[in-house]
Image (cartoon, rainbow, N blue to C red; front, top):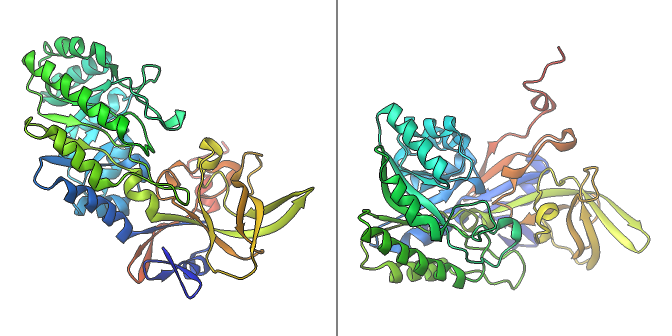
Length: 412
């Protein structure tokens, strides 16, 4: 995004035009920004065997999935519903990896039916269940066991996943025994190892430590006769949410992976989500009221925690900027929504432009974990999603209506 003549643009579209035509709140994404980040991953690998599997949980809109599939992405899913989305978007099932700690038998069977690429299994009972389902279908399932390397990702505790106290994966100390037990299961191909230590990681040192631990495990498993061919290192690269915040360079990180894995006969799998789509998105919201309680100022907007839950859930920071710059200075205010919760805020004690009712704001870096976590709390229809492509845009998900709120319900 950039200001041109004091008006904020996404690519070559003025965001104020979108707000006027499509209303607010509304999510807006940039095609160019998404492809730029994905291509940075792809190009950094060069000739090294790899697959960039986009983490669908970050943003699962069909148009974005189709865009990435056409660019050559694979997909990392965590539910049967995400698999349905990926298939509907036209992706090749052979490009899909199924992760997640609580896969049901129905979800596993659905994935086997469509012959997805592989499964990242997170417990011994899951391994056994997958084998029994594969046996029933007369197919073989490719498997990597997700290992918990007990390394602190130094991120928010809700999105840290690599310590023993977390629900994810199998303790690395138990991994060899789990693989040994799985050898006896006839319908699994034990060809990979997997890990993921967390999200929004700004210091890659823990991720590099993980690589070394995982490579040592690969060598031990190969020594036990297992043909390990793939190393899945998950996702987790962070993005800059605050001014002056430095995020890891995608190309530098990938080149570090390649250097460490070089010559080991492994295909590298990674599962980025946030780092591909977060910076591509903004949430447009209109100022409804200004209000003062004591010495505290409030800017009340039409987007609430049902639209963007991250500030309430993680106390996350999102820059909030006006669509039209003015010379009225700044204020210190809480930017709050209409939901009946004290936790319904987009920012607290924030210096923002001195905006007035009717002005439209852009809540930045909301392309990841924004709409996908939206809800209908307080019976609020969900916002539309809009994709900008050069000088044009298109609505890729319509704004919900009141009728949509009660679809499937009955008074009888």
